[in-house]
Amino acid sequence: MMFLGLPLIEWFGYFGSLIVVISLMMSSILKLRLFSLFSSVLFIIYATIIKAYPITILNFFIFGINAYHLIKIYRLKESFELLPLEYESSYFQHFLKFYQDDIKNFFPDFSAKDANHKIALTLLRNMLPIGIFIADRNSHKILDIKVDYVIPSYRDFKMGKFLFKKYEGYFKENQIEKLISTSTNAKHMAYLKKMGFKTDDNHHFIKTY
Image (cartoon, helix red, strand yellow):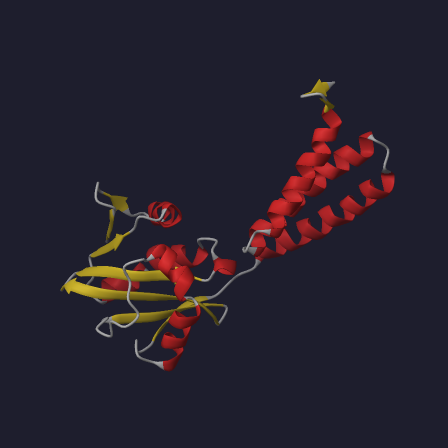
C-alpha cells in the first residue's frame, strides 16, 4: 500500500523517528518517557514487518524500560509542601535571577525589584524546591497572584493541583476567598483553566473558595 508515493510501512519509520526527536525536546521526564514509549511501539511494528529483528528486539527493551519507569512515576507517592520565605531572602532572589527569562515568558509584567509583595512561598516536591508563588492581598479576602512558577522539568500540573485544590485550606485559614491571576500566555491560561480558574474577556482568571 502506497501513501504519497512511499510504501505505508516506511511512514511508520519516519513517524517513529520524528517522535524520537520530539521526545528529546521534552523538558518533562514524564512526557519524555511517554513519547519514547510511543516511538518504540512504532519501531517494533516497522522493524517486524521489514524483518529487521535486531531493531525489533532493541525496541522491545526500550518499551519495557519506559513502561517500568512510567509505572514507577504513577505509583510514586509524592510529598508536596509550601514553605513561606521572606521575599528579600537570598534564596528567593537567586531563584528569580536564575529563572528570570522563563518567568518573564509567563509573567511579563512581573518585576523582581518590587519588594512589597505580601506572600512569598517556595514550592517543595519531595523536599526539592521546584517553584515559587508570589502574591499580594488587594483587599482582606482577595489575593492577586503575581507569580505561580514551576521549573520546566516538573511542569506536570501536580504542584498546581496540590496548591489550588488539595491545599485550599491554606487560603481559607488566611481568610482568602478569591484568587486573581492575569495572563496572556496560552500555556499558562490552559494551566489556570485546568486548576479551576474562570476567565472574563480581559485575560483575568478568578478562582473562588
